[in-house]
Length: 125
Length: 493
Image (cartoon, rainbow over all chains, first blue to last red):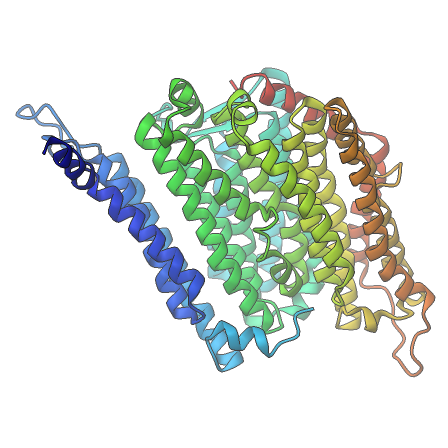
């Protein structure tokens, strides 16, 4: 019975990590398996989102409050991960915007956004 | 004034990029970019002087002391790479005005220089920062600018190449930041030196090892270490000539710098090299890179793509020093960072001149061009000698150190492999020379002449540097040896 509880807390206690791992793998799988460029960018977005969770979730201190100094509280959550991830979100948005812009240009130039079509009909050497 | 230099060399290109994007006047933007790059170069050179005299410079960004604030930190290795980046950036701008005019649409040229400055700012930032997350931000600044620069290529294949690089580059950068996140959760700091201190007792924990694995794989993608090099050949082959010359000489080198920073400063030589399988892994991957890169280069029709595959091989030589893991091998590695930048920069510049005059860089179109463009092709011959490692050129110096380093480990087989790999260089560079000099120019083909003076002269400054630095190794080897003693002797303290 106790063994079962331990396993349960292993699964539930690290739920944020399980979700992070799932997002990493799902994102990478989409990037590798899809030939459609928009879908690849979606995969990339999911992959980057996993990082946000990885950073933000350990920043929460159990029982701590928002990091605004006040005599009534003594424990605060760590604000640094949130700041970092705000930056990372901006980077992610910029990457997505650029990726979509290039996809538009590719569609104009090739008439397709499937990587298979683009790589087949062209001499790359 | 001089104590503000670390911030200035990064901040000024960033502001100038915004100014260029607003002005958009071609000549004005070019002048601004040139002035900024040159000033950065002067700043970096002065900083190297200070570092050599008084030791590493530490600069508290915004007045916040590390480890809370972001620290800019310049030691000898950083100053060495900074000089390389700003020097190449300046030279390529002097070289590239004409090339930009032919290859990039008129209304985009102002933006081109803005992106160029952003890219340089990012690359300098990666090297100068002492903060793990800050390095990620600068990495993305430089990468996003690079994707844009590559997509500006005239050919539509440039777009596909840029997209491919965007996907792989972002995966690499994200893996890097996952690794940093894992290290942050156990150390609670982002300052690299502080992190190194706090990691000491935690190095063998699974979190630290997982973090290390993510960082090494992520950065290897950026370095284009075989077999993670797939983005590189197309990106270099179809980017505008100016961009190729700049990227080939700087982008991968900066990533290698960051990789070394992690292996030696953050994780420490004793752990990364002696307690993990990284040296063995890097050894086999480097050998594979050298041979696969060179062999593939032989079968390329497009000269730019051929040189790009050759870059994959040359990156193998640089990472080989990490695998050899003694002072001599690592010196060879650091020297090759500079030497390869000089010779590949020169070759890509000369090939850019060919693209300008002939309009294509396919081997079949170069038949007999050697006699009509003597300065260009004579330069390529000398650059080829340097790649081959002929004594008296820079290529020889770095291979010499690598070979001696391998012998110190008793790896004589590796020395034989190094020599064999040089023969492959002879084959692919020989093909270009054979086509250009020993084939007849097809009847009725237009008469060619060398590209404009600015292009020839800058390329030749680099070619002559290949020979000069092959004889006078005081700067490259001297600085590299100092840097190595710091890296191996317990990190940059």
